[in-house]
Length: 174
Image (cartoon, rainbow, N blue to C red):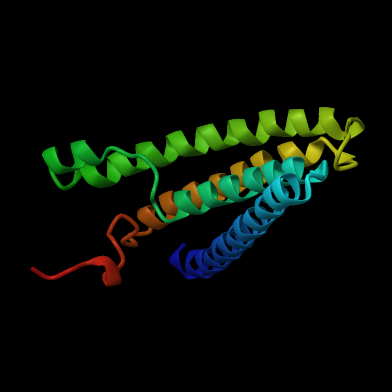
């Protein structure tokens, strides 16, 4: 299992890096749009109608993409308090329970976000002239990525990979 799992994990790492870059660019673009909005409103006294809707749309994209990356990098809530109190062997079990909970939540995001996206296809956002589906699509994509990343973590743990240990660059010697 390990021989095919590690290359798949490398591909998923690349998707997480790409998502993080897209989220970062989205954050910068949103900041520029908001600055433009403030300038136009208070200096020129002519506020464009598309800036607020675009900023909100970009914000939902980078928040959801960042949340998916957070699942892969293990930055989300878990059973950390119990890990320090229980025996060392319980760590993997608790992390797997946490990954299962994330997977279930993410599957709900895919299903219910997909339902909203399908329903919103025929509705147009007036100021942006795009389907309302674009506001729900980040939920679906992020949920799908979270499902993949939590499944990856569980399979890597099952294969004996140290997914629950912090990366070597974050470990400091006392």
